[in-house]
Length: 295
Image 1 (tube, rainbow, N blue to C red):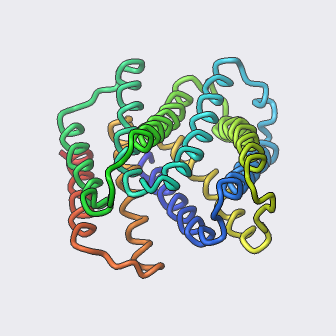
Image 2: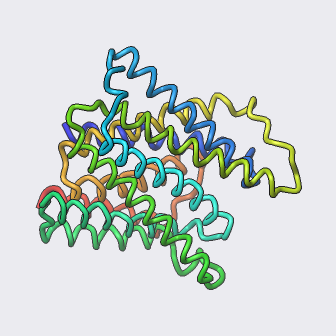
């Protein structure tokens, strides 16, 4: 079942990515990007609340301090990743994001090994090594970075990977301490905290911007709505998968699967040509998946 839930999260994640590509041409400034992301998170709140109400789970909205703390960690990590991702893109370090997100999976792996006694076997280590090489190849490190990365860019990339790692770890942590609390409740509070943080960031960006005009949401609202649904389902299914799969299986699979699907989607739907590095990277990613889950 874990693999099915992971597949569902990958499909919804790829759909979210497609909508993100379609809206990218409308979003050029920090304040507009923050606003779009804040609206996405707010819509996720309503989606989560709808699932809770129609599922007859409203009594679970009264959560204990432990679940609240885990949800806060998830919300802060989620909002931090969004903000740092935007900063990394603005600094021209976009091609290195996947590398540092791949490094970020060490956080849930080490955290679960220390706190929950999850075993990391040799095939997991070897598979993750192959996967890291694949990610580096697909990012075309030597050719894509035209100029040397600055210290600030490296710091942003590192923090981006760390925040993504803590986001993954919070999902796994929730499955261990949930005590029957539905995942929809966890997601509801996660996006509640994320919305609050991003709303503040949005206001700060607007306040410091010379151009006070905000983006016209109407032409892209449908895409934002679909992105919100897919974002919620991506998190929901990934948290479900965390109940069945170990961290050493789930997070490398999720990272590599997302990379493969996004690459194939770009080639099929946006006519981006696959070069030899992409083909080699995809082949190595498949090899890593076999090593991690079969050997």
